[in-house]
Image (cartoon, rainbow, N blue to C red; front, side):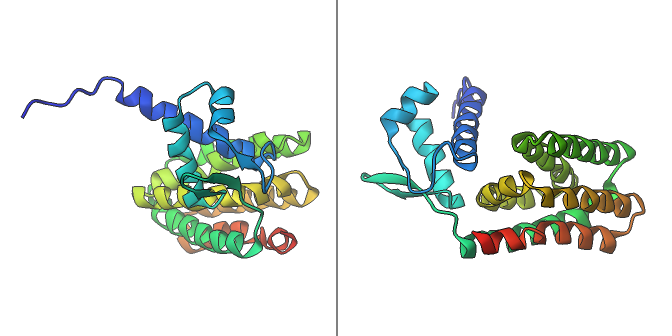
Amino acid sequence: MPAPSAQGVHRRGLLRDHVYSSLRDAIVDGTFAPGERLRDADLEAWLGVSRTPIREALLRLDRAGLVSTRPGHSTTVTPIDGVSTRNAQQLAASLQELAVRLAVPHLSAADLAQMAGANVDFAAALRRGDADAALAADDAFHGIALRCSGNDLIAAHFEQVSPLLRRVERRRFSSLSARDSVAQHDLVVDRCRAQDVEGAARAVRDNWMSLGPLLLDG
């Protein structure tokens, strides 16, 4: 059997990811409000891409709970639902806890330095009131344990549930209550540095579960 051509595979993959990230972020930051209908033609004009990557991105966002898609009819941004978001939070906390348990024995000095640096960036973004930069720094912080866990399925499942939490996280990162996360991150790094698997796992779970009050508001 002749080998399949790989031309353009990476470019297409990057395009799909870019479209997905752009749509996800527009929902998270409120550009597309809860209840708003998303029309393919409008999205094509905005993103400058064909319908195919847009439909693929919308299907991913539907699975993540940020949009509700009725094939052949309409796609609508979902409201912030406390129950659904709480379910996502519980799963995200468990996945992050497992990632940290697996990662701690393998974290290098460079990995720990990256975690600490991401938290410095996170704190600076909070001081500036830059919720988007805070989200990016928070992703970088938690992404290190996901990467070092050695289990790609954890990251894949986390990517499935985390978009639903981003709207709540963004609200938190725009408020003074987010400052607690800086200390919580510091504790995670401290416990990881001490090779305290149980302490690190407990600290990262507590960090994720601290979104609770905002879920009640949702």
